[in-house]
Amino acid sequence: MSKEIYNVTLIDGDGIGPEITSAVVEIIEAAEVKINWDKQLAGARAYEKYGDTIPNETIESIERNKVCLKAPITTPIGTGFKSVNVALRRHFDLYANVRPSKNLPAIKTPFNDVDLVIIRENTEDIYAGIEHKIDEETIHGVKLITKKGCERICDFAFNYAIKNNRKRVGVVTKANISKLADGLFLNTFREVAKNYTDIETHEILVDNLCMQLVQKPSQFDVLVMPNLYGDIVSDLCAGLIGGLGVAQSANIGKSCAIFEAVHGSAPDIAGKNIANPTGLLRSACMMLNYLGKVEASKNIENALFEVLKEGKVLTKDLGGNSTTEEFKKEIIKKLTK
Ligand code: NAI
Image 1 (tube, helix red, strand yellow):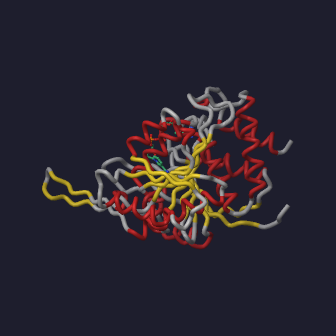
Image 2 (tube, protein in one colour):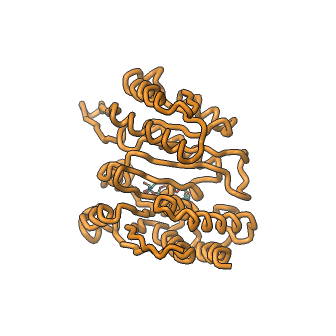
Image 3 (cartoon, protein in one colour):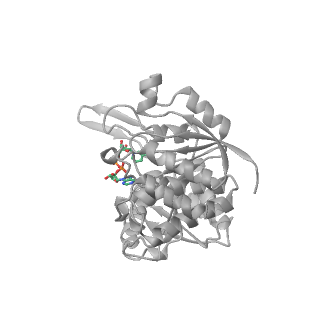
């Protein structure tokens, strides 16, 4: 086994963040991957300590290590500080959000043949945060779409398909209504597709996609789309495979990557030792693949799948009554047997 030691920034987040992070770190250690975890703060706890939700220390750590595993961070709704997640994605230009959705063993859902990947553009659209108050009762919100942004995310989607042995890439827009902004996304996809003639392509409007996804999700493979549609559709897809607690994601840029579960900080169950670490663990598996630790990633995934299949030690959200601690220990038992 390789003795290489990796440096990874670790942000254990808010709410259930610290509980699920420590479980994931222990599982990775049990898989014998050597990581120097560079622990940093972001969000509410960082604000309390440094008066800043993303302190310079955290930014410098990610710049240095180029890879970060991040637990969920609480974002106040409507008021308060802006989303730390959006700010990190923007700062590091993490333009590609990758969210695979594939059925997990023994997690019962209406479908058993879901195997698709959402590639969400992660830096533009209404997430660019351009909003103006025209008067007290009128707000102007801008949907920013650029040719460069479209080109690189479409390129990413095709390259992802090739690397992961996928056959088909679909582009998702509302170009019948948003003729300029979504029109640019669609037309750029068509241009980029000419460089990838081995991959089949298709085009679908986002409303039709949602309907088709809840009727016959197996028809979809890789789907690329602008930021807001990607946000909404990927949560829908998490629902198709068992919910937010089990879904993983990666935010990837040219020079660094941040891996995180798709769920939030779940304040309703924080500190109770009942949170499911699966989403963060699967995100960590994506991180291990990114670091080239493909075998260790597979071993962890297999151990997780065994525990799920046996169905004896499951957290509450999966229909069991085990604690985070017990679930973690069971995965480690399978890993080290
Ligand atoms: P949430 O995902 O935190 O919770 C929704 C429901 O799912 C809750 O009932 C929660 O208990 C449950 N849940 C979520 N993760 C779970 C897990 N691992 N195991 C078991 N149950 C789980 O969404 P909510 O309540 O809308 O957001 C809470 C906070 O999280 C907000 O401040 C929001 O802004 C933030 N958030 C942060 C994200 C991030 O850092 N990437 C992503 C989404 C939300």
